[in-house]
Length: 245
Length: 236
Image 1: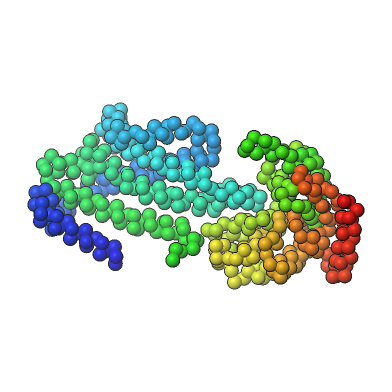
Image 2: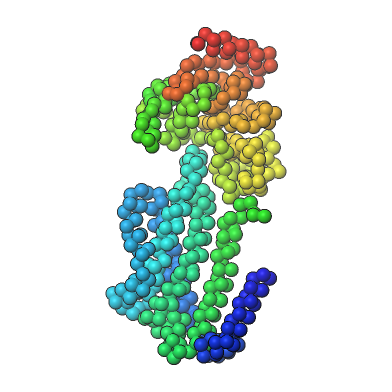
C-alpha cells in the first residue's frame, strides 16, 4: 500500500514538472504511455525488451557464478587471494566503457563480445562481496562438520552456503542494477536491437517520449524481477533469523 | 576399540611472535566402555588437547592412535548448531543414518520432543546443549567427546542433564572423554579421572574409580570425594 502511494507521488511530481518544463523536454505520463502502447502494438517494444532481458540474464548468470566461485576461492585460499588481488583491483577500477569498446574492437560487434564485456564489468564486485562473505565464515561450524565427518558436499550445502546466502543476495541485488545499466551502453555502442539501441535512436531524433517509454518499461521489468525473484530468495535464505520488530 | 594418546608436546605461536608450551608430555589410553575424565584449571590446555585428539589440529609432537573407522560424537563447549536448520535437521545432518525410532527415543530422553521443528535461535542455552547432546549420541559414536557440556547451567538442570548423559553412556559401549571443572560431574560419570596441572598441561594424577556407575550411592560418592581430598593433600 505504502509502495503504491509512493509510486503515485512520483507520478504526480513528474506530471507537475512536465507542465512547467514543456512536453518537448519532459513529456507528461499520458504522452509516454501513448508511445508505450504504440510500440507494444507493433511488437517492437517486446522485441527490444526481450533482447535486452536475454543479455542481462546471460551476463548476470555468467558474472554471478564465475564471480562467486572466484570470490569463494580467494576467501578460502590465501595464495589465490594474493595472486588474484591485483587483477581484482584493476578490474574494479576499469571503466565500463573501456571494457565494452575494447571487447567490440577485439571480438567484433558480436553478441559474445557484448555479453562478455558486461559480465566482466559485474564480475569484480561479485568477487569482492563473496570473498568478504567467505572470510566471515564461522570456523567453529567448519570444525563441527569435520568432527562429524560430514561429506564435503553436504557440509558445503548446509554449513557454508547458508552463511554465504546473504552475501549472494546482496551481490545479486547490486549486480542486477549494475548489469542492466551497462547493457544499455553496450547496446547503444554496437548492437542492432535492445532497449539501449532504441535509446540511441531516440537520442539522435531528440525523441524524449520514446526514450522514456523504453527506459521506464525496462525499469518496471527489473522491479518485477527484484520483487518476484530476489526478495523471495532473500526472505527464504534468512527465514531462520529472528524478525526485527 | 582403543584410543591411545601420546603427545610429547605442543607449542603455540602467538601473534605477538612469542612461543609458549601449551602441553607437556601426556600419555594415556581409553578402552571401549570406559569414561575418562580430564579435570584441570581453566586455560590449562584441555581444549587444545581435545582438538588434537579429534584431528582438528595436526600441529603437535607425538602420536594419536585412533581407530580410523571410529565414529566420533562431539559436544562442544558452545552448542555449535546450525542456526538455519531446525533441531531435527541439525541432528539428521550429523547422523544421516539415524533411525526414526532412535531419534524419537533420544528426543524423549532429552525432553526435546516439543522442539523438533524449532530453530536454534529460538532455544535457551540449556535446550541448545541438549540438542548438541542428541546430535552427538545420534551418530552412535565409538568415541564420544564432551567438552564441559554442563558449564553455565543451573545446578538442577545440570544434575538432570548429567543423569541423562549417564543413561545414554550406559546404553552402548563407547570410549568417552569428558572435560570438566566439576569434581562432582567427574566422580558421578567417570571411570578414570585424570587430574591436569596448570599450563603446560601434564597429568598430575590418575585416579580409577572401581565402583560401577550405577552402584554409586550418595554414601559411596561421599567416600570417593574424601579419598580424592586425601590424595590432593598428599600431592601438594
